[in-house]
Length: 359
Image (cartoon, rainbow, N blue to C red; front, top):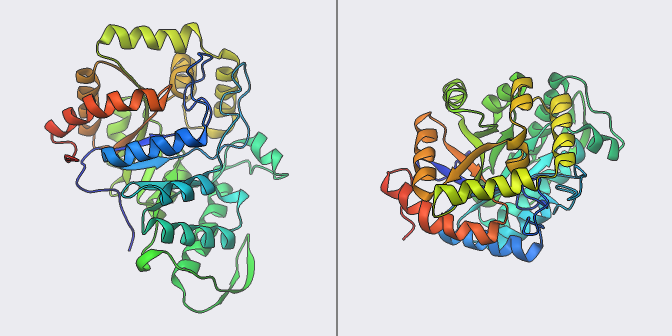
């Protein structure tokens, strides 16, 4: 049984990157997110009570420098997700994992334990590698091509899934792993399989998602590309990435965006991020990297949702109309800003028929 996100919500919504300092915003403003654990726990409980679909962390090992050391402080995702599964009731919590950094036998046991704790609410976001400085930190070589990275990820995930499903110990003789007498308990909760997400933009990554994942996390660049991505990936659900600046009026939202993402942007961190994305990730086209520098300061290059509650609800409706299954959202200060989004935007999406009422 492969789990999916809540079918009651036509447009799924998840909070992204709250485990990392700065979240998605490379800014020096005083209120920028610091990734404190108590704040993460409080945010998770608010999101759970509000009926949000999922929490999704970034597996980050090194920050991007600059005055803010953007994403330099990050809570490790497996321990983060385990703790949040224990203190929430309904929301899916993802553990983002670099396959190259965690042995599949270890990962399979960790995930099964987590799924038991969350009673079937674990999601696994499999990342097959792009950040060369982080590979260097682990003493590993980043494979030059996407094909080898995903071949490794494919074998890694096949082992994890076999551990989840097989009742008897097995041997494994593969390209990357040679294992003997593998048998691990517990199994995932209720005989199910945790929801699998793949974060990818490359051709190889998308093919991997079609074979193995319930949903694909990808960059939401514009609505035309979103429409093409959703059509190409069916039946895999496509989740786009965005960041939110929601204020009572459009002018207030745009003024604040200019304040934190322009006047007080951490441009050294932005340039480092863009350099690495261009060299290794290939998540963004060269044209996007060249023309959307402000988006990288405002939200890691993701799609901007800036305006009043009406404007943001209308834009989310347009995104849903492309066929995308959902979007991730991030804020400069998640705890301060999410309640306004919850109270003003979510009810509008219910009235538009995009989400089920949480009342």
